Image (tube, rainbow over all chains, first blue to last red; front, side, top):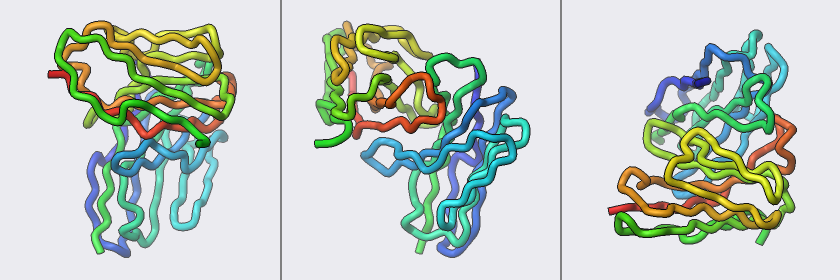
Length: 113
Length: 115
C-alpha cells in the first residue's frame, strides 16, 4: 500500500509567522497535488506539481516537488488568519491507471491574529 | 448550479438500515469518485467510475456499492449500515480519468452518523 505521510498533523501559529508542511512517501509519484479544505466544505485544489524539482508559487504559498518525486512541501510566508484550514497533499503513483489519488492525512493549520 | 451537489447534507441512521447517498455533477466529467474522511486518516477512496457504465473498487469498498447509469449521477449505497461507517462522505469528479494532473472537484460532503 502506497502511503503519503504528512507532517505536522496540527500547527497553531501567530499571524506573520512562516511555516512549512511536509508530504513524504517511499513511492514515486507521477504528480502531486495540494488541496485546501475549510470546515463544512470539500477540498479545493491549490496546485499540481508534475516535474521533479518543480517549484510553484501562489502568492505567499510556495510548493516544491522533490527531485525524486517522492516528497513535496508547502511553505507559507507571513501566515494570515485566512490561511486557516486543512491542507491535504494527494498523489498519483507511477503506473496508476485511471489517475486515482492517494491522500495524506492532512495538516490542520490555525493562524491566530 | 455548476459543480457537484450531494444529498443529504447530513443524516443520522440506525444500524442495519439501507442508505443511499446521492451525487450529481453538471460538468460532464467522465470520472467520479466517492471518498470517506475520518479524523487522522485523510480521504480514503471507496469506489470510483472512470466513465458511465463502469465502476471500480477503491481502498475501502467493503459495505458499499455504487452504480453509474449515466454521466451525471453516481450514487453510493450502504446496504446495511454499521457504526464504523460513521464518517463524512465526499463525492468528486474529474474531466478525464487518464490524466493524473487533472483537478478533482469535490462536493460539499454528507455527514453520516450510524447509531
